[in-house]
Length: 168
Image 1: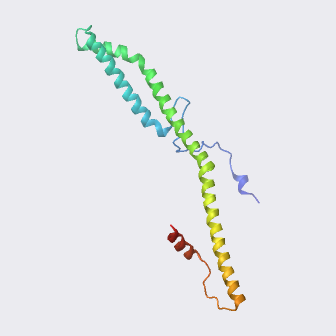
Image 2: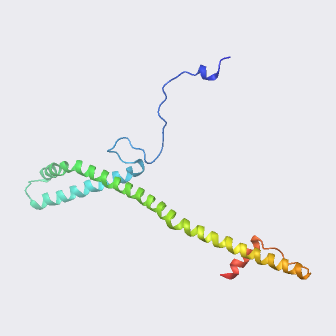
């Protein structure tokens, strides 16, 4: 009998497609979730640098008309473009790393401080519940010892919730 595995043909499979926001195409790229911020930063920095250079060129007054001034502005602003792009990528990547650092720090602090506090609080609640049951059992045994009828209901979750509400 031929098994299903014998019929399978080994064909190369494309790598699985992911839609993670952390996917990157190259080391110089930005995580997909940060791409809009990177483009906005590049845009804002380019406009800002162009305004600064334009202001300086216009205040110098070295150019005869608008066309010469525009050419001078582009000539002085264009060499900064690679630096602007690299700075924007670095800034967004730094923010991405800080977000990761904040997440790791949060998890560490939760495991170091919050979880022990929750465990301690739960242990106190369990101890309180044991004391309630022990008190009820002592009263029950005392009533049986004295030959009295014991009709007190055992402690229950509903009673503990109402008692906790009255204690606060």
